[in-house]
Length: 248
Length: 130
Image: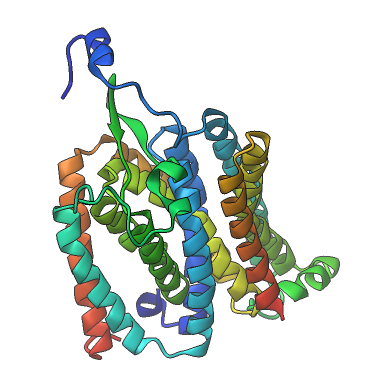
């Protein structure tokens, strides 16, 4: 948005995050209705994403984001291998650093979804502690850059927590509303929301996202992973170019 | 992957653990989200239309605390702002509905987790306007 319209970065971030709330509200509702959002997992991770988003919003208000944008690029590159080759189940059965109350069985995160017609897939969820920390990071990035943060949430759920791709995308859609709203409320309170800019962006994405969720439902999972990995690589490249001053 | 006989496939599959997807929440959540989004879209679109037909001096950004004054002064930006506020409170409404569900189910862990999310969103409002 900054690139295309040449507007103040803070106003752009604030308008963008308001638009993200709108997208996620529509696509989140669709994901839940279609049974591809793990609501329990989403609510658990939202504790971290909402807190992270508030910190990210204040960072965006306080900082010039160049170094942080570069760090974001590093995070995206690091996520690619985990997308392509998920970690699988932890060897010690998930015990260890995680406090007993956050053990996967205690959180009852395992779930199922309909992969294709009449084909139910059950899955386990691993490493809630790691997922929680990375979700906090996703929240910070979301508030800082005015993005949904699915670009980190999806690799976290798929790569570290062992969640199937479609459920990772659906749960991410579901979580982004709360994450982005936390950041957007900070921006709104601080007077960074331009009503005309933000509402125009929000109305625009509502139309676009209705189409996108439908595509994700139909697309082959393997192809979805490849598309997502390619997007990660492209975003990382543009982040590095921005940080290096090649792109504005 | 796709079995020709659905019944056979069902029998082979392990009993699906329903825990992660509370059935009634899966009905309530989309309803709350869609109602909030619809109200927000109508207010934002109506406000923008009004703004376009009768533009005030400028579309300058304003803070949450200015909203009541703008609405009182019949400023189209107030209507747009109200739409944005409803949009931003819609995820909060969804979490509140979830909290009610977990309290009813006596699921203390998730009632606590959703309460923390509500507190975080309240903190976002408070820290923003302070």
